[in-house]
Image 1 (cartoon, helix red, strand yellow):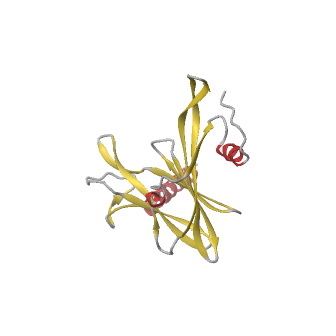
Image 2: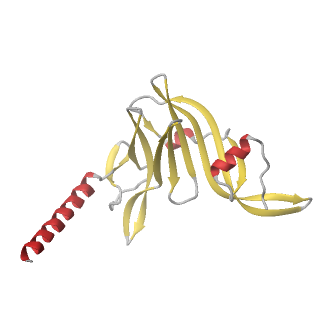
Image 3: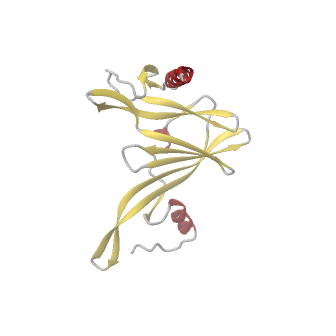
Length: 203
């Protein structure tokens, strides 16, 4: 029995040590003006006007570096570095999709990236967000419905090696193709209906 207790204690100690090592090794630096000013989820006493973290995404044997905006949020009377977006990469047969999901709003920004002639090329940028659609039922008669706003823009940007990809760099232009879709449809269903010019059922 004593040996079992010692063995269990050893396993617990080893697990705690492993967790600590993982925590230390997974510290993500926060950068501002090309200088490290702290780490994600740690307290800081600095002005954070243009802070960001760098996230690496592998695609077709290349490393792509994405900037993720960072803010200082007051938690338990401490200013804590937190990322403003969750970065979600997804590789498929059609290429790489990288989604910036806002952690404070319903907005999602999506990069579509393909490998073309040994270059990593940004082929489409999209923005998806929740909103309310003021739908006209009849003359002087309107109804508000929950909706999804979808904006897309076809682009052709070669992403240079070793260049940091900035969210705002590709989403500052207003000449995107936008439309409203009832929120009862998925984004994929909205895009399919838009492609076939099918009418949306708002009621």
